[in-house]
Length: 236
Image 1 (tube, rainbow, N blue to C red):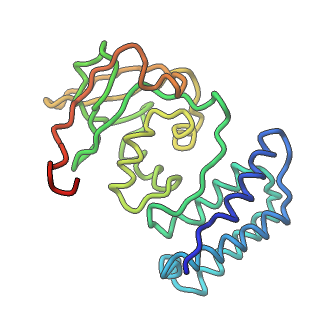
Image 2: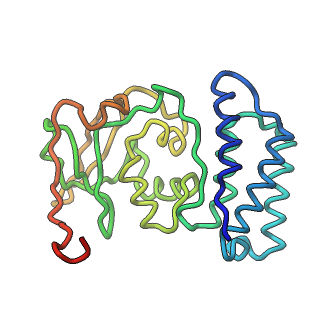
């Protein structure tokens, strides 16, 4: 019977809670947990090896990971989670991942939500004062082209394919934590978006970063309402 990652995740959660209070992670325990993680990974996936080039290369990648933990003296839980994410990226299954500890009150969001299109991302929710921008497509964030952000997202987020990357961007393109991972030197209290209207003209807007608890209650919003509805009497 396939087993979940419960033991590893519980152990890491305990370490993470300790780290939030300023306690460093014991490196030998990290190694023991990662070995357990690899065991669970093999038990819960029919073929975790092929994405790494085969079984020997899978184990070699895991061995390099553990050696790098020793060499770099990794004791921070977020750095450990970041490295595990990098280890898992080749797997590309879209659901096997590990969450990082987010500092309380630190992850702010720009009040915007996007909708995935076949050829890009469109503004689906925005403050009422900018409602004329609904439906405009994103071309850049803080002068970083969308295509570049897509590539960078694929290197930090667990996704299955390009569509998964785009969906990740829909929710996180305004996230302070996410932008700090994908835009070097990102800081400040606002985010600049470059948008393109249906005529091909570009417009620049600036949105403030607000607490996550206020993300969808920021003043008033205008949004694109989806016409999709579940069929009645089918699978109710």
